[in-house]
Length: 612
Image 1 (cartoon, rainbow, N blue to C red):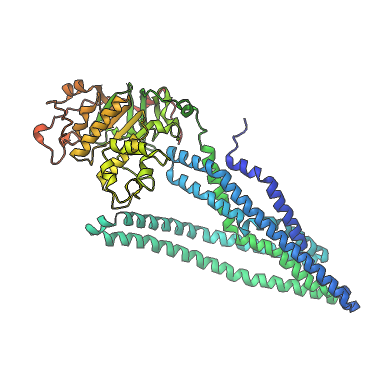
Image 2 (image 1 turned 180 degrees about the vertical axis):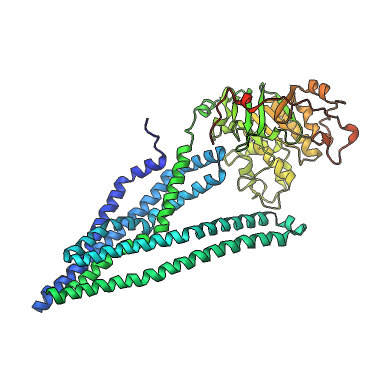
């Protein structure tokens, strides 16, 4: 079976006709470049011998017209390349964006974002003079052949000069490749350190880390500059050899042509004709050498884009099957997660199911796999083995705008995606204002939003100091609740909430249960557990206990006391210990059940482990 053609390959193949037109323009342009050389020959052979001003005028007008037509053909091919570049970007942007997001989900986010930037780099190359030079380099053999026709000696000098230029270019590339790579790595590292320092500047200044952070940035920047200077010095040495050699070959051609005139009774015009032909032959070669970096870059761009597009998973039909409102039945079937590169199991064969309208509270010590499980259920990451089903459909196929609207997810670290409060809550959709307000009210945020300067049109950002963490968490909660999702996963939703915020959260959970939505809450604080139907206890990546809330509390809590939703106490549990400031008289003492012992082979035996 032949390999699947990527959208990039299909788009380039679709450009074949347009590229053929560009090649036609290039043929005419390069053929017309012979006109000045022929013009000189005609002047020496016809005009000077006949001393005819009319002949000179007609020849000049004809050559001027030819040169004008050549300029027009060059302008037409550059305009055609510009249109091809724009068409390629428009054609590939949806496929590349979708593939990059899918690749970032399954593999490397950094490589995915780089591949999306490569799309712009591809367009810029197609529009550049370096791309046009690829069509001109094909005509260098033509001019070299004409030189051989004038005289084999001139052709031999031209061929030797071309090989000499290519050799010097290759030498320059070899001696500068290593230092330039080192400079790029050090510069990227310096930029990364600077971005980290800027993002944490308040903490850095507060605890006296400014000088140390600046020193690290300076060290990497200095290493980048030193490596770049080394590459520059080596390149200058090659240039010092190359420039005199280029001038020497030009002199050699002129001298050889003059010798032919003296010894072989040739027309003096061949001196100028040979010089022009020699210059036209070397021009595309020199242009290609100057664009060497651009060619290497676009080749790497093509490979990255092609690899990302080839690795993209074709759209599944699961989201189309969930166009209708799902019931919300959740099945977690023997899911396991292996940490890439280490073989360490983050999750060990977790299985359970929830009916529509049920709320599950997941508790356990820090590092027990709660957040990892939450990401799997929300479809944010994929399991190494096993599967997560919503109404018999794998949640991994519900990541598009159609299937994803049935899911709500509140992560621990909330990123503000959107320009305004309305955009953030509405998940960047053009939603009805009333639906946005309903989600904000569910999260207990409506009154706070109305007090903002522009209300729901207030501009917010991740780095802006105007949005406190508690409000950021409520904003993320409103986004998770927007659109009446059938499955809602809340990871530490009450970590930064006060009494009023936690009460609003409990009320929101009750309303979602009443609407027959399936709700999962990851928590270290006991107050929210009063709204749950079932509780799961995680430890060491394994599901140690699962059952009705009352049963779990009776079995694993010494003094079962779920806080009232009227005023939930601040009972924060980390590794089974109450958080600071908690009322110890109200703290139930959790007794974590033992960890089931299972190996990675046992857990992954029934499932194929996907390759990264």
